[in-house]
Each structure stands twice: as structure tokens, then as C-alpha cells.
Length: 236
Length: 236
DNA sequence: AAGATCATATTTGTCAGACAAATGACAAGT
DNA sequence: ACTTGTCATTTGTCTGACAAATATGATCTT
Image (cartoon, rainbow over the protein chains, first blue to last red):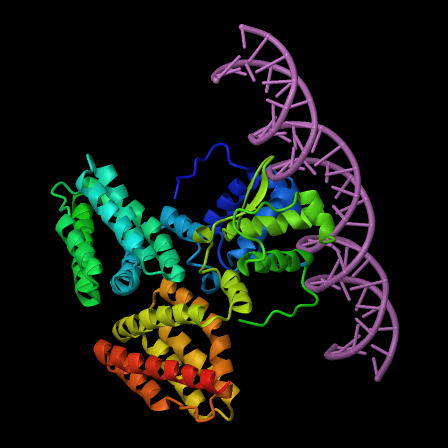
């Protein structure tokens, strides 16, 4: 959610990020043995205690594997928790290749139409209202940033309305990763197309409990979003 | 993947599991402050060092939040990494309610049809062969366990063939959680319906690069699987 | 010479105690 | 009533030590 300020975090957080990024970005290759704890701790100017706390977290994310005497090794990417928010963000920071963005967009194309269908069936009145509030915020948005923020809230509200926390959790992970690219693209796209009418169509379909209508509207919305990204890419 | 043997793991692993399960199962309610580190460490008969390593991991999973002076608090479930393999498995251990299984099945219904479509478009020859190998293993399966294992390999091979590690990662998390319920159900279902023909249809559709055929076959497969679970439930 | 067995050194795992930094709570002053 | 400052408590970090595991190489056996 909030952008991480790089300066005043705890030490282990910095260590986690530094090593994690090195692994995800490919600086540390899979199978490669890392230096011993003592050595690595000294190298990073932290105590072994702090380093170990960081290593445990990285192990929990599936990035490394540690055995006594052998030391630590970078695990094969197949074992990484790709859906971990940190892993994903490190990957975004390191690998802004179109290939990866495509994978994220593909996830979104799978999740969101299914999500609006579920939301149309199961949303509560309060959840519907939350979606409507985000929609209003988009209409009143003074600038692009406010619009993007409200848009995110809109999609988030829809996902919450599915009443399936696995689904909303998945979306939040994917979406925060996509948001960076999205904002980037929106900024560069001169003739950016605000897809408010489609948002309203989605909202209405959810309100009237029409799963199929909601899904088709959402699909066309995503198609536009994709087009916007392409446009931004060409101009950037 | 492998079942965790409870006995000889490292201390912090045990602490992680114990606290994590307590949180996910609801014994420790959200917002509730945990005892201080020193006290908690003594209470669990481990050093503060070990306890802290465990707490960092739990914090990385979004389960707890720690601030100086205030201590630790259990975070609201909205912040949990529901897609974390551990969180999910703890939840399965603690909450075998039908409600939760429904959510898992819903995820599967969303993921798999989309996945086979992607696989039909992008699979490599090697990936196709892996799917076929799993299919053969299912045909030759001597007992239910072997059949279930091969079935899992089949679905896994399909997901890998999407060439989208986010998708396969998601599936592996959901599926391992579902597997426990699935095997349980299969055991109790006397007239269990082996859906091999449908598996073959899926395979053929992927081989011939027919996304839509693959998707419909997969959908009917999942529908049968769901019916089997219901059947098992009634008889168990 | 080849293989099995064992000793050892190295590395992670765990522990205990200390101090630093942050911060909520409360007292004091305006 | 509000601000300010002190204080105590809790987490954050460091250090050094020992236990447990195990890869490596030496030694012994065949």
C-alpha cells in the first residue's frame, strides 16, 4: 500500500530488501551458495542476529534454503513465492520487461471478470455502496493522481464484494504491482481515455445483480486499459 | 509439497507454526496484544533470539505487526497474506468448514479454465509431453493414492505449460490446500467417478491447440470433481 | 588400490546478557 | 486546558559463547 521510505526502516528490513532484490533480479543466481552468515553479516555491516532474522524471512518467501554446514543457497525460481507482495515488487523494480507486465495483465484478465461475476451475485448493500463511493470519487477527481487512486479503490471495492478473501488478496498483490506500470503509462499517454462510462456500467450490473453483464463490461474495461498502456508505451 | 514432520524441525519453525496457527484459527483475535517478547519467549521455552526470528516471519506473512514500546498485535485478517502456503495450510488445519472449501473451489474454477486456454496457446512440445506422461501415469495407477498423485501432476503440468509462473504458483498454493479435502472425499466416495476421459479430452485440446475446447473440457472436469466432493461428504 | 570408518573442522542453530532507540504515560509548568 | 519534558518499558541491535550437524579429509580395512 504505502510506499516504503528507504531511510529510517529497521535494519533487518533493509537487509531483507537488499538480498531479496539481488536474488530476484538475478544478481545472485539459483543454486549459488551465499557467503557464510558471519562473513555476510560483516559485509553488510550488521550483526549476525539481524542478518539471521532477514534470512529467515527470505527463506519463508522461498528465495533461499539453508542447511547446516553447507550454508545457504539461492533456490530455484520454481520454489519462490511469486505471489508474495515483496517478491513481486522486487521483480517489478528489477525487471520492467514487457514480458512480465504481460503476465500480470493476464492474471488481471483472468481474475477481474470472474470477480465481478461473484460480486454481482454476492455483494452486500454496504459493499455496493463502497463501490459507488469510489465511482463518485473518480468523477470528482481533480487530477490524474486522484483519479488513479479512486480507480484503485473502485477495483478493490469490487474484489472485496466477492466475499472471497483469497480472490481479493490475489488482486491486491497483482494490482499494486501493476499500478506502478499503469501510472507510468497514464502519465505518458497524452490522449488518455478515461473509461468512466464503463466503470458505471460495471457498477450498474453489480447493483442489478447481472453477473454476465458485469463480466463483459469489465472485460472491455480491461481491454481499454491495455490499449492505454500500449499507447503510453509508444509515446514514452 | 512434503508433509512436515513435527518432531525434529528447528525451534523457530515450531514457534512459527504454533503462533501462526493460534492466530489463523482465531485463538488470538485481531487487535489483541501479545505478551512481550521476553515473557512470550519464556512461556514457549525458547530464547528471545529464536522467538524474534519467528515473529519476523509471521510479520512477513502479514499476521502480526510490531511497534516499539507498544509490543505486537495481531493484524486484521484483511492484511494477512491469504495466499501464503503456510497461512493457507494453517487455515485448512483449523477451519475445515464448507464455506472455506467453497472459496478454494471457486478459485480453482476461475484459474483452471483460464490456465488450459493459455496452455493450449503457448505450451512447448516438452510441456505437452509432461502432461501426457502424467495422463499415462493416471491410467496405470494401481490404487487411489497413486491416481491422486498422478492427477495432481497432471494439473501441475498444465499450469506449468501456461508459462506464467504467477498462475502456476497460485494454482500450486490452492491445489495443495484442496488436496487434503479432495483425498478425504475420494476415500469416502464409494462410487467414485474417475474422470479419465475428460483428462484425455483436455490433453487432446491442448495438443491440437484448441483453447476453447480445452476450457470447456476442464470446466466439466471440475464440475465432476465438485460432485465427487459432495458425494464423499454425504457418505462421510 | 578401493572402499568403509572415523575424527575434525566448519557452519548453522541456539542461548544469555547487555545497551541503544523509540515511544506511551505521566508529571510539571505555563 | 494545553504544552513540555522526564521516565519507564518495550522492541531493536550487538556481542560472544556453546551445541548440533555435517562435509571433508585422514585413517583403517580388505
